[in-house]
Length: 302
Ligand code: CP
Ligand code: NVA
Image (cartoon, rainbow, N blue to C red; front, top):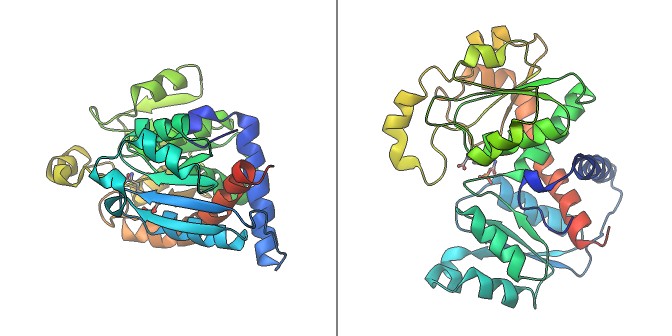
């Protein structure tokens, strides 16, 4: 593994290795065991979009690993004035040891990796959010013990989260059921990938997706960059809410995940979110541990 660009690039074994190391780093952090695997290394973090969790967890994670995080706002980099990503990649490769980037176009992340000579980590694009899904898988395994025999359902927009959850969930061996309105389905490359799995279902019926689910996941109806579509999206996603009716169809011990930020009373009710706050905020915490594992594996010679 040279980069973390999208879930599709990872094998099941690589995913499990990341999760195992993340569990170990979480244990070490909680028990005060130092793990400064990235002493003397620096990570550049390029943000073209807003962030709370990704920025703070990468920055803190790098610090805990003994390294140095540099926050690079795209609007203050020359990239924001049109310097090509291909040149930025080659320049940054001469100063730092890894790049995390949050941007719109997946191709920009792929180009950064292709032209640079240091590991690149995708901190969210319109297409994928692999760091979040690694944290989600870590949380699922923590609550359920293993992935065997689990049904994961995703209800809502066929966005970066739907794309990455579908691929990640199938790779680790879960049944995956996705409910999206027509016109808002996951990316065609993801549907093509999922075709190879009998345990994948795509439906426009949230009740069908939620039936007997062990894990219920949703995300905002209008992702970053799509905010101006919110009026039409509110119409299209009516009925695609994780609420008590949906939860009554899932298994009684089902957990609920949400990458956050959440829009209460849109994709999830306040009641469901608060009843499942333990899982949802553990999931947010696990961003830190999962990303530290990714950084150690990519930048620490492991
Ligand atoms: N879930 C997530 O990526 O959150 P941020 O946008 O706050 O980084
Ligand atoms: N789908 C959301 C995820 C935010 C973490 C977005 O892209 O805005």
